Amino acid sequence: MALGDRIKQRREELGWTQEALANRAGLSKGFVSDIENGKRGIGAQSLLDVAQVLGMSLDYLMKGSEEASSAQEIEIPAKLAEFAKGAELSFRKTLLLLDMQRQIIAHRSSGKRDDDLETIDWQKFYESVKDFL
Image 1 (cartoon, rainbow, N blue to C red):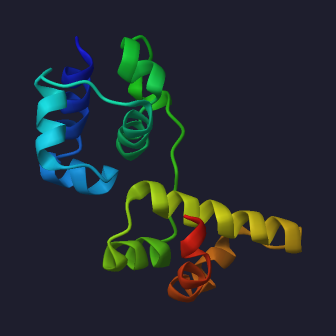
Image 2 (cartoon, rainbow, N blue to C red):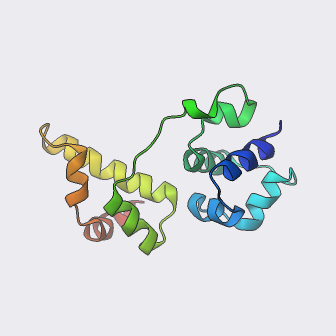
């Protein structure tokens, strides 16, 4: 099975359209279509974005040698997901925003938990760091 076939299979398992995958990965629908149909190659960063959005490992996408379910799941806090959707942030930018906030929390206090991520004003945080994304 080719790379495009693995992407299409996973996308269909999730019940997503090509447009839904494209929006989540920050790509165009035409680009996703071309990849799935083997008409185009994909760069490393775009492939990483697709893998993360689909919850698959790069190894599986490239070689088909690993179970798709073995990829690490990433949980996006509900308030961040809501903000990211409204602000039309790509999946990559959303993950960067989450990672930046987690690093700040880790440096400030060892007593804070991921539960605290639901209390953050994501709009305000985004405005303060958007130049770094």
